[in-house]
Image (tube, rainbow, N blue to C red; front, side, top):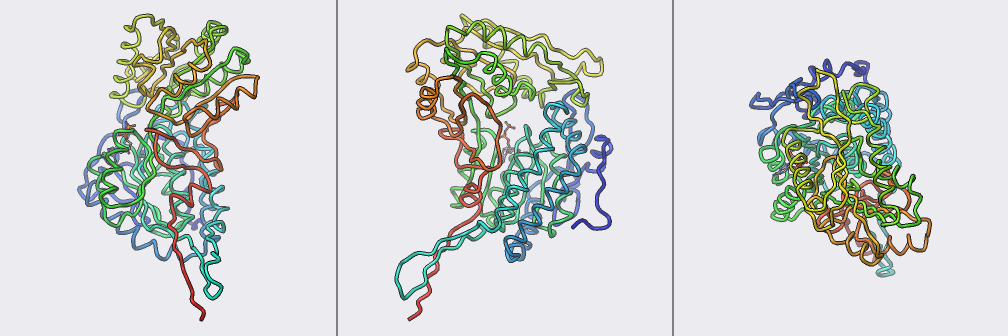
Length: 500
Ligand code: ADP
């Protein structure tokens, strides 16, 4: 349990960022990078630097992996249920820090506190509590191989796990990797995203009050200089990665050279099929959640291709636009803000270029929403008005390519066979939703859609307990479930005891 010098929540995110500035967490202690170098952390809502992050490089990776490799055998020897109890304690402690973590992640990512950042911080513990209970479920099998032999399989930890995470939901996506990896008896080295290094560092610092030193380490730095050496380190036996398809392929190739397993959670261009008989208001509410407008559309699961039956198409577009228009864009830390800022300048440029491409596509009607912050302090912030495109086909670039911004395509359809074919006509296959009162049709569509996570008449985000992960170029493997822990963070050994 936490020591007497337990960390107290620090609710001023600037003060907290100052304390974490320039630090990595290796072997249980905050430490600067070996080179002493740092890089700036920018507030996307103002464009101003508010902290520095330690610039982790190869030598820092080596130190973190050494610490993890040293700590792992003793961690694996702790009985599994006891490890689970420690992970539950981590969850409880994280729960005491929800407000500070929410504020810090809002400051560094530009995600609004009320609609996104506090929500992320408050569901974090749930992932730890879910996996904590699965310590005793790391079971193998007994095999009736020969009556004179006892033949069993056991699930063993892999060793040191490298976890590479993105910036959009950094704490939650980190939790989906470290909680199952740790319960299964692995140690972990996390590499945070360069845009959002601080809240995850704080979360790891909090957990390190409970975990033995070296079991959970975290590095900040850039992909090629810090992420790549982590994947390549010969002592790292497994990599779990969430990010872009391009980087996922690089990670996969390096892992292939070492013949180690990987989990890849990559991009998406998820279809939402709204049938003629659907409850339009419910579908519109689902589109708002599905498109993650409150997260500036920065979600790999974003329901960015909305196929709406021609009978209700116009009503759907009008209602969707009205709902997005009613949202307030502004300072992420302001409790009245619904929509915050885009994460970074390159991402801002990418999203605006897609809006331009969409506008220039013949037939396109761009419904641009009005929300924009008025506060002069935010004049250099990375704010983009959400755009709902109508009149585009599934062949247009805006409908085919992942934008990762507040840009939705509403595509009119008439023929059921054609809409299923269009929904599946994508290199991605992460998620899909179907909206109808006809459950026979719904079942048919769920069976035919090529996606790893398909829902009817709702659009829930990732839930602990339910396997989550894409098919096609959306990735390899599952997260969030019991199966994900067994399949991705353990290896099976067969043991035969000859008793003759
Ligand atoms: P995004 O476009 O969302 O930034 P990336 O896939 O580039 O997505 O980044 C996701 C994570 O992968 C980040 O933590 C990033 O630093 C890391 N990363 C980027 N390049 C590499 C690489 N070559 N090897 C390992 N990790 C990398």
